Picture 1 (spheres, helix red, strand yellow):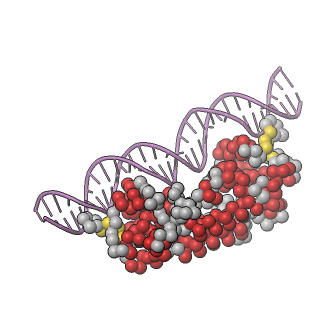
Picture 2 (picture 1 turned 45 degrees about the horizontal axis):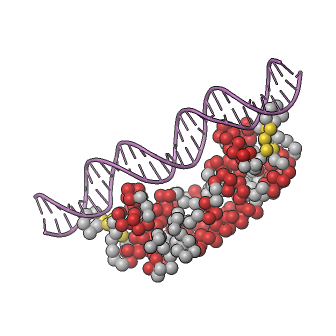
Picture 3 (picture 1 turned 30 degrees about the vertical axis):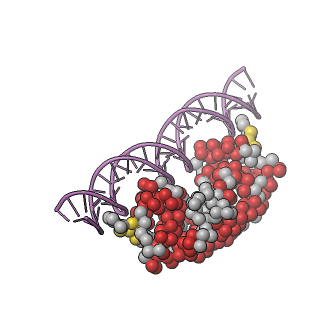
Length: 144
Length: 144
DNA sequence: TAATTAAATGACTTTTTGGTCATTTATTAC
DNA sequence: GTAATAAATGACCAAAAAGTCATTTAATTA
């Protein structure tokens, strides 16, 4: 459904949200380890996310990644759009560029419903809420 | 959502179904042209589909691809499983191998619903019905 | 049985995605 | 100001997906 890059991005941001809620900045090493992602690849992705203003960073000792308050309201839809683009939300299920309301593919209408479902879910999922599930230990990002 | 290979496979099989309904076999060249796919890549995919018994083929003059009667009942779910595997139907939305009912990821339950939606839709979509939409000109696989 | 036609087969190339490595830049603390 | 720390940056490498090319095999028709 999502690219690996996007999966790592979402996991990382939820983890950073959890830490930020406690007033902590967190480094690449800890992030990568905690969400089970390759460290250098994670660095690249985090850099891309800061470019999209989806996370904040600070260099040097005591530095790391963190969320500013309003970022707790960031939705998964925004993250997916930033990393994977909006093909998932708008593209034809069969990959037809010519597919449209006037010339629909055979699964056009059914797929529209599903895409809407997905978009609504991702739009409704905010980092603040997802982070809270980790806090309450009703959800996890890794084994322990 | 699907790989390019899978998109081409679905489009090709719907097109072959349409022709088969009229008692015609159809060659790679015509298939590729009609569904807007690269010819040689299409050949490879069709070969893979015959291997999965999702379509029949005959060599030589008057040869080509066609569906046997019972194949009109093949679902898109079966095609997707054969080409892309069942990751789409069963995998974790965030790519976590450790995600499970006991250790769910933060979007586990919401995603389960969506995956079920997708599976049900694909399971309910049969080549015979999809082909009929082309026949009745209420759906298309290309511009004209 | 020879010529023709069309799928089968396998090696190859290209593009995209996923991932690594080494160096540089910014910040902090002593 | 210097040492230490951590992100930024860019070149590089590997694997998978997407796509091409050339040859072989099987079926048909004359």
